[in-house]
Image 1: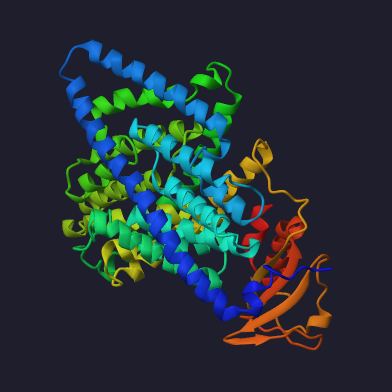
Image 2: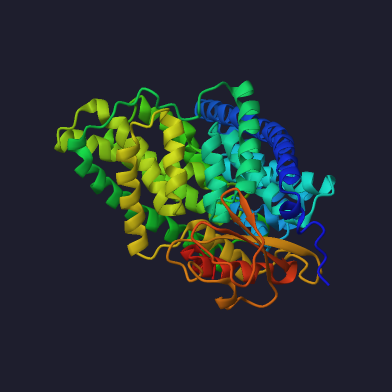
Length: 529
């Protein structure tokens, strides 16, 4: 007999459930904002200290450099040990969060919270070309998971609160609350569910409030003085979209290849594997310390026109290579900021070429930097809405949307034609294929509610419930049409835009979710196979 307690909480008591999600969102936002602000502050201080360290090492005797090498060896050993203790902290953390949302992986929230924080500080703070945004998303996700468990929440709530925490994590890391919400919905859930949107938006805005009170009101990339690009230059945006699309496909291929090389190599013991990228940071630190870590300083340098064309090209190569070597090692750290930096450098190269060869007004050089960031992100992550919202928040203006859409969609189409899959989907599939992770307990008898939104042209649209061949182990219990809640009957007709609530058990939830998404018209469901 079906136990509807918890699984039907959000259906029977809709209003009470929404109020509960609202206050849980505030709590998650406050907690995540505090954690990510501390994480971000420590890494900012570490970045400043690292740049000063290499200036010091460059003017003093070699013994100081030898001491730093010994320190990096110790850091490598510690990182290897904590990744061994908790494998779920390896890499950016976004694939792990996706796996938890899709009911494929289980995160031990307290262990992940502690070790991801420590590991991220050590890896990024030591100079590896990794970003803090992916770890911030995972930190927020496990904060949401932990709050749900501490409050004795239901299974149906946990995925919502994990998503809310992920939104809050990105919002606090970027000072971009809308981008945080849209990324979690577009990348993690692949649909815009009202309960998830309510909780995620509340958590994201709250975390952003905490972050802005500490770091100030401006986003980390401040392009508010960007002029509007004239329509006569839009043909150049199509060329930029083509280039960034190709580069994005190459980025994805290179990242997966770097992981494979690290797995197959026999020269370096796994205990010392993270010493490889750490040692490579030393020559980079002497030559261009701003390229270490996430690389935020590089974007500031491009914005102020500090780099000549050849310097930009060299920085693209160095940042790209160091990112591949760093991420391939399995160190705790993300690719979110490094890929934006590589996109910005690519845009900087393109902008200078456009000025020199196509006589573009130099005042529009930074436009190509910003648009290349969005296009490169879109080609790699395949999340064009997030890219557009992120750049809109960075520039503070909707006037750039036409140009932004043109370059991003061009990059997206190029990546799609070349059959490049979203990088976080590829990383999740690798994680599941390799094993070694902790899967959810599929022997549980707990029930949960799945949600699917019916798309135009799907196999469900226009059919009556009795005419649909429903999968086994599921029960359609509610249809939300606008503000109306419909009790499903055999002759009830399904229309586009309906939110279907389907009861199942945890054991069947993941496979059933993919099937339902395909039936509802989501092509993305096929990409998780």
